Image (tube, rainbow, N blue to C red; front, side, top):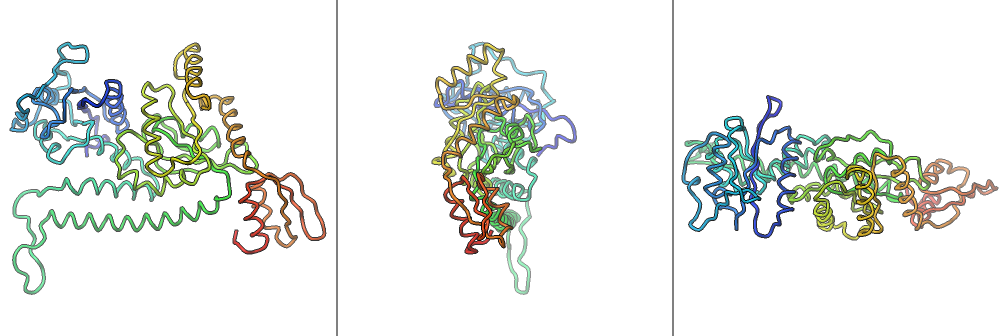
Length: 460
């Protein structure tokens, strides 16, 4: 993988529009690949796009576009793969307006990578590297590299490494000749494990080791979540860069990392809503989703996404200023269904409405969104009034399930006082001979658990 720390890296984007993808979704996907590249610190030097009935089995693109790509990067070998367009293959050498598309001569010799907006087979990647003479990365490997660089916690790093190793296994190839290893020990004869077999075994062992680490960390996370099980919890979820972390800061006053880049957040952060509500409401900021997110990443990050599954409310944040927000909304819904969160109550929040345009454009956009999604929240996380209104809606949502009850707290169990104030809205306290009678509003499950705590039948 190229290192942007060693100097500026420029890349050409490659994409094929297939018959089942409309033009708007296609351009949105290509633009998103450009944003992924910039998140890696890569400058986009140009694009090579083509409409085809199917990806070329050897090189993704047809021979005409391969020739254009080779001229743009200024290198590579001429080979059969470059001549590999089948009979009847239609290379469309025009742009979307039907005009001849100019070859990017200005970037010739200055490009260090080719980024492809599709998942490549090992042979396709190898053929493209031979033809262009530069490193080739598909969309999956770009996302994995971003996750690798942005991982901070031990759990996130282990989760990303597992998926990266799983991605690497089928792409391993023998390097050179005469690399077979001999069996050791007395009586060993003939060739033993080849370098390829040895590498694959090492990767399998490493994946198993990381899996055990993640399971142990997942147990710690389950213990932490168990302590919060009686609290009201809202999980911010949505497409990457929808403004979840900015909203998290605004709702909780926490110093979570915020950046205008994709996948700035990979670790779940849990903070208390401020000003504090009674009962306390916890807000969690989760990893963002993206179209064509590698399935392995979804599975690997399941322990992180469990915070979403156990929330009482999902705050589905959508970037209202993005032209492709409807597709992003759909992708998030599909992934939530995939991880089993489809039945969790959901509040739709259209964020960044202040970026739609001038005042009249913003008002028109707000009206249009509410006409289509009347129960949605349309706001900007940078406006205090909008954040305050959202806070009230969150409090009102959880208040629907509260009931009044009374907890008898013996004088020798005063250590439980903090627990009562954390999970209940305390209405009245009466000091009597048998203890403190606390009248509260809380969830029925919280009242039941407090009664067991006072009786000493369950630990705090």
